[in-house]
Length: 92
Image 1 (cartoon, one colour):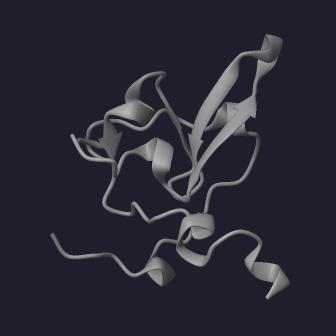
Image 2 (spheres, rainbow, N blue to C red):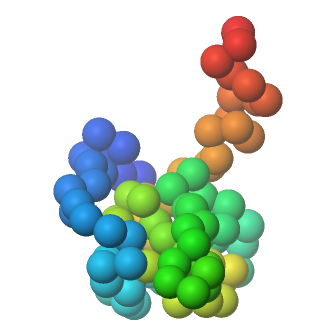
């Protein structure tokens, strides 16, 4: 698998998070490692209507079905910046 440079992974969708489409198997693939959506730098939680949590990928600007964030990832997976640089890198 060839890594994708982050400069080519620029999100382009605008609008409300609730309007984003769900990501499908064309984008997400199964994995059995710690490299899953939950541990990715682009993964976020948002509060949707009626306080229902929405799981999102900021890179692809799409929604993740509940549970898929634990078993799937895309080719744009990257380690969390806090883990890469340590706690509060802006203070350095």
